[in-house]
Length: 97
Image 1 (tube, one colour):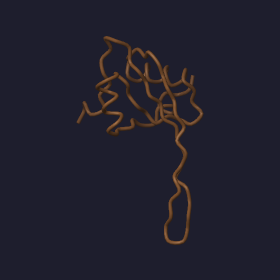
Image 2: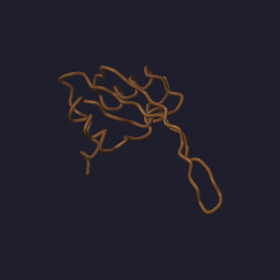
Image 3: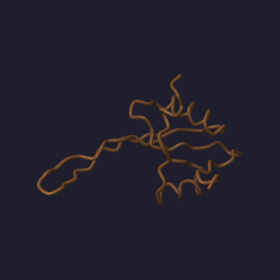
Image 4: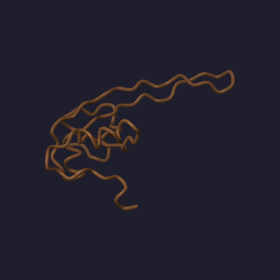
């Protein structure tokens, strides 16, 4: 198994992810582009010590950006929506703050 810290890169904190967290017990992460659902599930369970019900993934293509006359793309990335099982503690990212 790969290192969980190489699979789960960072949490995605947006209005949508905050709403999903409170309404559906789902947490959103940026994950390694080549990670599959099984690896993501095992990594989250190992890092946060919670049980996972399901994992949904989504590829995000980079956006076109312009600086002066030069154009380019931001990097493409992958995100995963991880649904926790009932009666599991919610993952809190700012507990230590």
